[in-house]
Length: 310
Image (cartoon, rainbow, N blue to C red; front, top):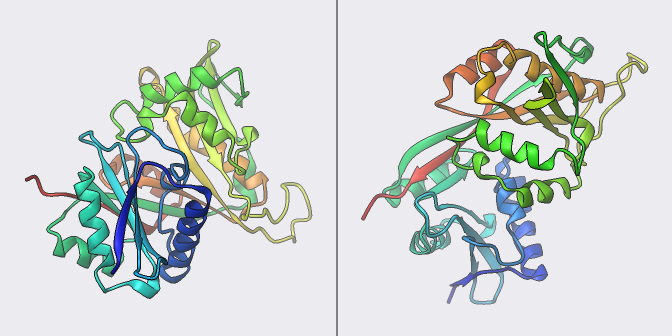
């Protein structure tokens, strides 16, 4: 009989199983099955993280769920079921286990029909939408925009800027449920990832004080087609990401938004990338309009469902 195991940590073998399962699901569904935060939390025990492994009676892993911030009102789950084991109850079993572990909400990546059906069967309410927007890059994007007078830009310097960035990020995202609570350890964990590039982590200063940033991300598999200034006939390839853009609340309304976004696009364009994407909350209409004016279009949707209060 299939069973769900609850763990505080996942060993290397289990982590490899989960990542392989998630990769298979992504290949079938055409969308990443899990988030970056989900992948980073695999492994040793972490405060507030619960792992749920669903195995068939032969011991094969057929599904996995993770609950983050367990024990708090923000406890959120993600889950993935192997394509070969869907529609036989594993998803509902994992969902029930996640709710039992304290999950108050569940993320569904891609807004797929199966996820909608599972949410409906469990009485979950659609409560939040996160859009992935995308636009092409061209040589014309490679020129750095002009910042308002008094502002300057430079690259992040590991070891020098770490604490100041954590403070700025907390201020910029004080009302954001995930981004605003990143710690110094969280920053260092991301800096240790293969995709981290300090040259693409752009900081804006005014009078020597860090006031804004645009952090870009290029996964190792997104190989740039060419560098800016090389043979114009060489094709662009790969996708970069507007990973995080933040502005000190005290600097809002000073005309930083557009140029700040443009700085990151210019960096990615100079790397020879073909496209750039970003994620934005569905209820952030101002940001979606701004990105729309910059040529971004909706290409995918993640949905958060809320568990009914009992």
